[in-house]
Length: 127
Length: 141
Image (tube, rainbow over all chains, first blue to last red):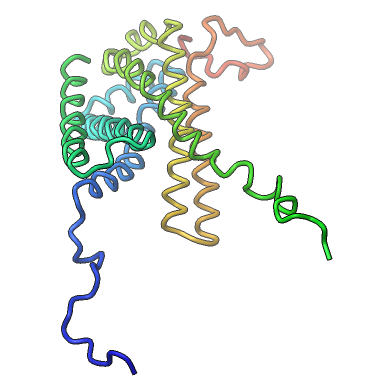
């Protein structure tokens, strides 16, 4: 039998102990933000439907969306939206075969994170 | 013995012609969402919290209304494709099938709900069929 004594060598990187590179964390965050921003999406559509139903019912929806809880969901979804947006733009470059080398990826990681924060701030300030 | 070539045996069957359909639609909808997101957020953020008058003033305008409908519809489409990919990555078998179908149903329902609201400004229902209008108590947009 070959190699019965495997020694105490480490196994190949295991998902539980493997420290994901930043680009992989951003990738999984893009997925999570994509699914998660549906929370805000449902609220927004409900707001519109309430507006078509009656002014009285709309007052309830408008108040809930601007309550601390509603704003928490909306601002969270807004950040998720811009994060997903920014990494989506980066993926357009990836789709075109550009920006795959590690130094560029290391830089564009921070562009994505920075853009998501700046765009969220801009939206809250200007709109 | 068959004289069919391997290519001839598979041409036009199975996924051969639509394998990249989802991939391509995901790109097209995301490109469409770049301008739509920006054009949607500005009037929405301004109307939010302004009560029913602000809603009517903002979304009574053709451009704002069409932008919002397009944004909601394309975003739901984009969500349906993306969510399907997520489900297919982590689940198999019956659970996958059921969840993908539920995702499509949910996305379609949400997209259509986003279109209901800008009902015509003068919706007058006949006496015997009051439900023709979405709600007779509504000040229509």
